[in-house]
Image (cartoon, helix red, strand yellow):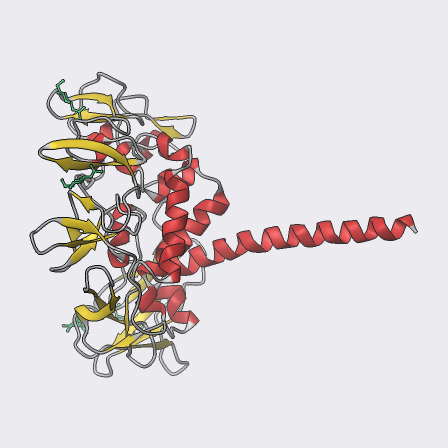
Length: 388
Ligand SMILES: *[C@@H]1O[C@H](CO)[C@@H](O)[C@H](O)[C@H]1NC(C)=O
Ligand SMILES: *[C@@H]1O[C@H](CO)[C@@H](O)[C@H](O)[C@H]1NC(C)=O
Ligand SMILES: *[C@@H]1O[C@H](CO)[C@@H](O)[C@H](O)[C@H]1NC(C)=O
Ligand SMILES: *[C@@H]1O[C@H](CO)[C@@H](O)[C@H](O)[C@H]1NC(C)=O
């Protein structure tokens, strides 16, 4: 039904690419940000510009300026449209992935159709010993063993025989030594520990979901080692000029002596400024890692298909809404961090709508609890006064 990327031996990647783990459809608005040497400017629609009814972003090419006007209907979101305009279109369904264990409304939402489809609002997959080709076809707790092509239980922490992350239970990943793969708990390797895989995002460093800092480096003799969580080397947010994958450098890592290269990205601001992406040691990133660890340690993660353990939809299905909203908010906060600096709210609501929405849900959760505590406090006062 849907084309699903096979999540092989993937590891965490730095902020910019986090959306890879989730299959909520991100806003796909037209942007020159990735191509232009000088960054375009992003401002609100002015009264002198006339927009056709469904336009939300209009590019004035000669001026290299985007004009934004948020969609008014809440059922619509701003998506790339004809030419260089973006238009308000129906919001994509959140039930778009439908892996076994994920929430659904009808069987059409589910990726696997052969096994009962949507039952009690959860997508059903192939049971143990049933035939499979892909990991995402098997029920939670199982993986597709590609030797036998049957759904078999995922390996537990400490068990050997894995080659991929998806071979291990959902809170674990595979570390391979002398061709023997063993499942270890996610984030259980300390800085300076050796790890068998580090998805390098540049020549020197990358990410590993086994490292507690999520970051790792390649050593001189081509081994991989977990890093201390490196930080930005200036006060946040850091402006930059050399747009690209090595336009920013982290603070120096004391142990390895390296400065991790980071992305410099055009932001969605009125000045056409670029900003550096966050590093794992920065406070917002640390908050995201903390919230992720909470998910890894929750019961809910085991109700997800092994390839869907990091999906928003599975998290939403099996985690309480406060924790889920917090996770999504921090995810977008770090992923879109360079883009949102000094942005106008009309631009946030169009260009970075998933972030803007996540922020609202996250803040709404906070408001609810503080309102509730106010009410409790008032009630306590009322009782205290009634007593006199
Ligand atoms: C782009 O948007 C402008 C402003 O709304 C509109 O005048 C123009 O017709 C649009 N172009 C296309 C191809 O939709
Ligand atoms: C749309 O933008 C591209 C650059 O991204 C440009 O090459 C093209 O000419 C633009 N089209 C129109 C109709 O403005
Ligand atoms: C897959 O099945 C083969 C044959 O039974 C077994 O040797 C191997 O360990 C299994 N792999 C996993 C990841 O369970
Ligand atoms: C993980 O793998 C690396 C590389 O094979 C190895 O050096 C390291 O000791 C392994 N870690 C554990 C805890 O087995």
